[in-house]
Image (spheres, rainbow, N blue to C red):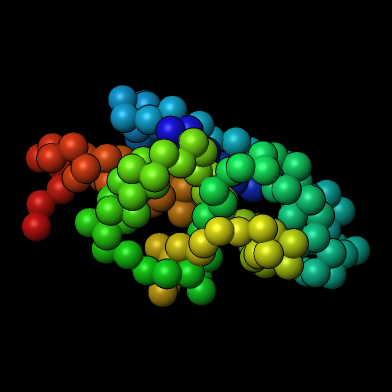
Length: 157
């Protein structure tokens, strides 16, 4: 199974990039995993939030294939424990899902087109995190999910 994480912009913190890269390497032991970056929308001072979301949405939609299972990381999404998230991932593996794409949207969320295209929404917390820190939280949870699926001693209950 191919798993892709789409994020907006690059991270400003070297330590954060290094931590994300460490988990990226660990996850590749279990799945074909990649992170794709979309550029920040330019000249946003002259745009409404809706226009910014639409432009980001167009970039996101251009990166998707028709058969991708699309999961939006969204504060209004379903909340899982780490074990439940592992079950979600394992369920997609068992259903022979070829490609799952997770997306971290921009500061104002997703366009209506992206919401309509989504197969599901996932909330990492009721708290709000910076888009840069969400990257690290998500890749750590994805790694944790694979260790749970494989019965490895990373996760403790």
